Figure 1 (spheres, rainbow, N blue to C red):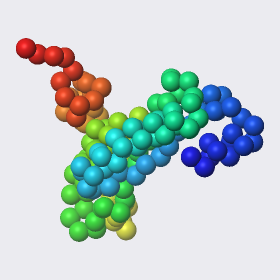
Figure 2 (figure 1 turned 90 degrees about the vertical axis):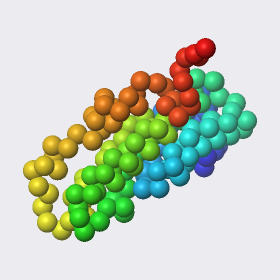
Figure 3 (figure 1 turned 45 degrees about the vertical axis):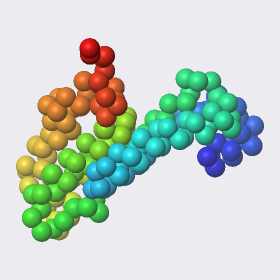
Length: 147
């Protein structure tokens, strides 16, 4: 909000620069809280912008990138970090992120990552094997009405 206000004060029109705005979020381990955080941002940001700056409707889509949180990773049983980052990435996807970077599961370990760390395809599994990409809003209910 402060960036938008400063840009307007500098003489820019919101419709000119708003399409280039994007945001960055961390996804932490509390699965449902993270989903709620992302979904609230998607709803409240555009609603606030609509009321205050009245931009063109197509500008109101909140675009954001998500990084899974390194703070949830542990040195003990480091292999479990694979599951942690998978849940954090799934929360970001279900929350509506446009893109996601998964923190390397070996990040918490002081030793060098094993070759297996580079072969994990968590994001591809989430996208292609869970069915989460088959609908625009997986938590919003069915995509078609069934009688």
